[in-house]
Length: 362
Length: 269
Image (cartoon, rainbow over all chains, first blue to last red; front, top):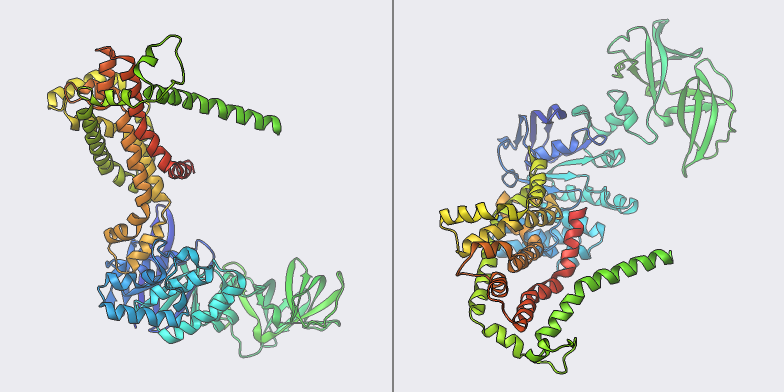
């Protein structure tokens, strides 16, 4: 059990900056997800934490111990690779026991611990097989078993579910959550899948171009993205962004767009004033209400398409030069080209700087 | 489509005949009675088969010692070649380093150098270094000839084994060396064995350097060439010697042919 401190990590490959200047504190027992598009440096960060990458500078502390210069085997970590990296020439049992053998754990204890993790991951029946004889999901379980049998202080996972089909991924996601609850190792989990991140993480660190853009709880990441990138990366469909103007009308912050005026609740304050009043209005598809009649605070738009997606429908609306996605009830009906009005829930509106994309509203 | 197939098959038949016909003829001759070989008109298939010709060859002066020499040279060649090629192949497969492409090119370039040009300076140098007429000298030359091949094969073997496996072993407490020995090595072993056998055949069959660099300690091909050219050995000695030379290569290639194919498949990729 250990907390992790990353201090000013930097890693470059020639002229390519993989990690710029990354600092992060991870609490003991926490499940932290590193989330970002490919090439954002999340895997590099994880590999640096594992000791598989040599940093240009920065320090890594695990449980208060400086491990920056230690080899992977001495850091008290366990790692699950994207490709599982099971040893193909060893049986499942030998794969799992490999690390214990390297540590010279007594034989009887080896057997006990293998049996224990095999039980936890429900692979007891597979111990005599070779990795080639296993399905993808079973290999995944073996890879996790091999990592946690070491009882690592820190469990590292590099996109562990990305090689599984959709249904199995859903199942293993829940399994990983259960296993984390039982093992309680501090876990750092890398993924580019925002749904995985939201469902698994105690906290999510969203990364872009080698920097952490926002590190917060899944709810905060989802509801209060720190900038335009986070808003458009998280959520399916992602947050809508429309240009608008911010004014103070009758002492209240008001957004204007195409003649519509949306007054914001008095409790909400701007953290920084936009340069010329132009802002990006961020709103999630589920926080927009569609009405058939005009209203002063409703923005006019035209229906492009309506797509049923099971429990909801996804409505695409053209608003001036912007496209807005709205989730509606399954009963909602509209024809293409039809004029409708959109009402934004003022409590849920995020305002971003039109130039920097950074959030402006508390 | 059928025309094309016809073309492919006839090409295959021609190539197979090109390779097989001499082998068949030499094999038949090696098991023919001595008289048959001198008869005119020549009979392709003798009226009876005999071991007499082969036994005559094996019992000839110098043959058995030179077989032993050949084996020793081949084994030394494998050792020397692997000492250099195995780390080189591993490095080429695992690391991106400055000059990596240059090394790859240099490996190819050595194959462009005609050994004939080097032979006289090499013989002179070996005499000076006291390597002339010694088996290790021949082995060094054979190793030089085989290192490009072995390096390419070895690196393709290691490329085929994911580095992530070694990394996984390291996260499980192995040192880099332990990870290599416990994970990569066992998986690479069949491929490395194939490369070793390949080297063996290369050395066993090599005539030119062996002839120039030895006098009394002849390897088998050098002995046969010398017997034929200098002493004018009789027909049946030639056929039996030829068959004896071809035999190990045939058996070995037969045994590892599938493996060699996949090896080169990986190399091409």
